[in-house]
Image (cartoon, rainbow, N blue to C red; front, side, top):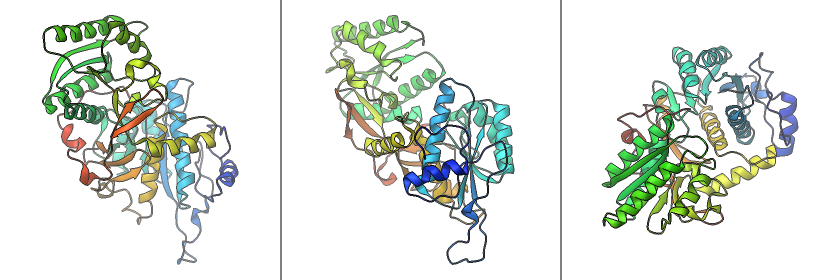
Length: 420
């Protein structure tokens, strides 16, 4: 694949040029949603079946490819991750068909119908929850399963499986780990939106399950300087806890590179001793400069083991000319899982039994398995922030035999929809 590959639909000429750089041969390249797929070498006879013609196994990828905003940028990285998996796994009998779902329910349904008409046996995507709902309507009628990128648990089930990271499981992982290290009284500073609602509910449930106490929760609007007052109230509660001999010993601050740089100075200004009050995060903490702010150094957050991610990131950057966003590996893994099932006979490839197998799948982001309710369970590590990068302090399980709780059990009570 050429460095700086354009995000128009990949033509066979582009595939061939790019695969020459990989030293691979692949017949099933991504085809445009605007017309019929190009002829594929996947029709060549399989070994031992000279004279027989094997129809390609078609995997559809539905993404909101239009526009220039953040959503389009995320969709671009997901498409790149999917194409990279197609090239690297290199199954000549698999063809990837990409469709623009428009980011709306109606257009996603139309894209799914078109993909199914083209012969797609499984759908990867969409990204946005409303698009998942639209695509699911068409997919269920055709008995075609969906591996969706949405993290909104409300759209899961009945043939829709969520392959993205779920806030409930991440939150339970970090809170239960903190509790195992003696943390009992928890505070939280959480964004004020639908996703924040989801995280707050998950946080309260996780603390309750761990036997801890929620001392204070403050919410902040996503606007410039809007988190200052809520953050100060949390800091005041922490100081009051020390005075009242009921110290708060963990502060949960979910957020990423857009929000943490604004919170760090407030923590430092308030004089909070982060050696006594352990800062806890979510997987969004997993960005290279998180330790640049001294307030977050030694903080804990859940994430897949970083070794495989680093190798993936290097290959991605070499292929596309820029470092991948964290979500790119989710698409890579989803395509890889689908390809791993594609060798099964027609009609048995993407059944619920195969998709929900007990030992799950293993990819860049570690082990994952799906429940019949469409929710995923991941094996997550706990990382500690260092001045430069992060280090694993509690390993991710290598298999599901080593896990104690399933995500399906943890989330059986339902949750508040997330924004995507």
